[in-house]
Length: 109
Image 1 (cartoon, rainbow, N blue to C red):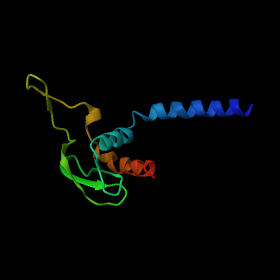
Image 2: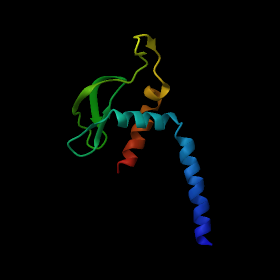
Image 3: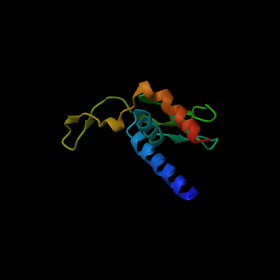
Image 4: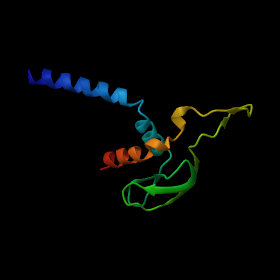
């Protein structure tokens, strides 16, 4: 009986996680992690803005060096060099930046 009740709650939680994948906060967090660099403390340092080369560690706050990044609303080029808009999952939404950083800090604890 207890296992049956637990399985019901587990299924509901999985459904909530699937719905959250479209959240701009989750998209921002994934984008920041995919463009992060390693910090000496063992955590990750994420980009500090849309365009640049500055990173900040989510654990110790240090700013290690890293490659340039462009997460802003600049167009990408296809193979024929025609400008195309970037897909929304490749754009950093600054309105949700702080929420995404807090989410990453909670996950890395």
